[in-house]
Image (cartoon, rainbow, N blue to C red; front, side, top):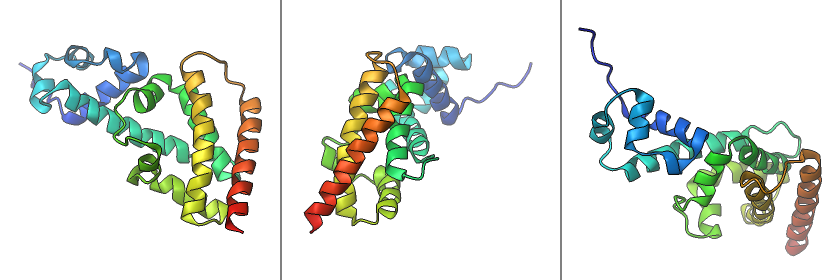
Length: 188
């Protein structure tokens, strides 16, 4: 008799991530994860007490992926690059985008909590270095750009609009220039 394959927490979370990517969080449950892993539901429930605990672990894994995705900037303008990557994430990973940002799983309850969250620190730091502004002014610029980018990303992720990267980049650049100019004027 061949040895049984041990189902780890990491395997369960990865199976959940793949299910989210393919069909959305609403299709993730103990049974679908077990089917993906070709096992009974017992290993899933042994590793996690509830499906909510599984979903929180999946959320954390996708959130790390999202941060890495945002920070992979190929553009000279880091803020524009991050904004475009945010929108590209919604285009390329719509189910992950919806789970992260439209499902109610985000732990922060308002924009100030999001901007001040530990997870956003690398993004704010990179922008701060690129802009040469104080952390507070960088956060003001980030807020403007993130609201603009989130609007585009949400519309695209929910299949309400096709993605025209050139047009979106022009609009994002204008919003960025306006936000930077306003932040610098406020400093004077």
